[in-house]
Length: 166
Image (cartoon, rainbow, N blue to C red; front, side, top):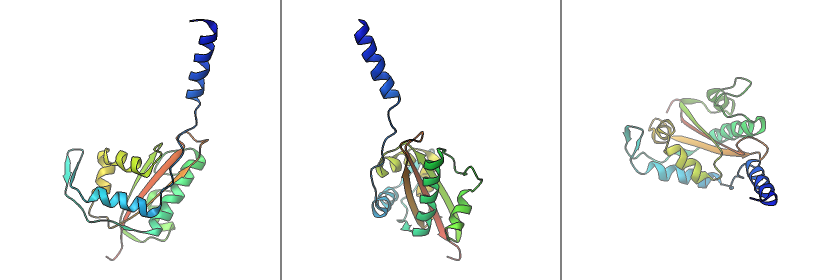
């Protein structure tokens, strides 16, 4: 290979390695709720456990608020964990948003550019799939945040819950 081709190949590989993470495709709350409800309409195996079809989840704006805050925090601070760097966990974030729960759960994901891809990835992971199919949860809120300067580019959060006293 001549020097010119070698230099071009090296430049192309370098550009690919430095490429920005994927940008998120905008998704509305209704689109996300529809995708989650569609997933629950069919029985499915999560890992080695079969889960029968489950009723649709009701969209809850307080769970969405908590999900949006955590997704934005992960994007802004470039981390990917259920617990934030300042020690806040999912239960604390949900309570801070004003949601009083009997049961609560969370799925997080980074790097997927669309709500459909996020749901499909969660359904392929046994623990995340279980959260989606769990009949203990009656409500959901989901959000994403994007930061092209962060490691993963796009951060998704799903919060599941059932209200206290119901």
